Length: 200
Image 1 (cartoon, rainbow, N blue to C red):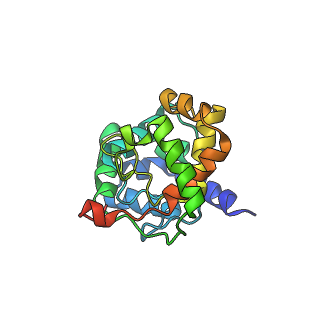
Image 2 (image 1 turned 90 degrees about the horizontal axis):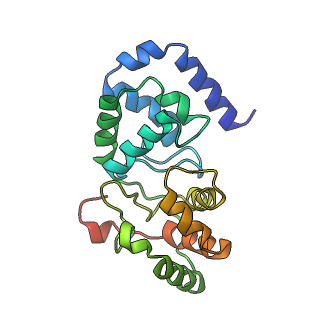
């Protein structure tokens, strides 16, 4: 039995008691998030994103989109089904205050970094994700995120399987798969806390 299947079964068991989950305080809800996203901020696998220290507006929008169905995920969609807007705002505020973890991913090689920076300049990544790819508000931090998650997400935007941001889909479709792979490796290896000055 795969880890993903085990987690899905756990989610289904929790949903059997969805009323209790809806009544839980924010700390209890956050503990349920830790089952996949990690108690110390390091997710259980490299296809699950870091949410500790992620930007508050972005976190809220993703929870909202999972609930509405505009973003689909077999684990997340049922998890958020019982959440109200106030719950989603509170969870986003909770996780954004936590310190982004160091996943200890390798730096991209010089060749990969050069290819990634050329691609980033071509599609204007820094226009939304800012100079150090830290994002802001409703835009995601990319720096230091799992490489596998980044690459999967870029390709999902590209092939249309993730459709909750049409602008991103257009940009990814206009970018060669090899450039997206280079971008994911480059972004994953970035350590930017020294530039931010607040552990995010």
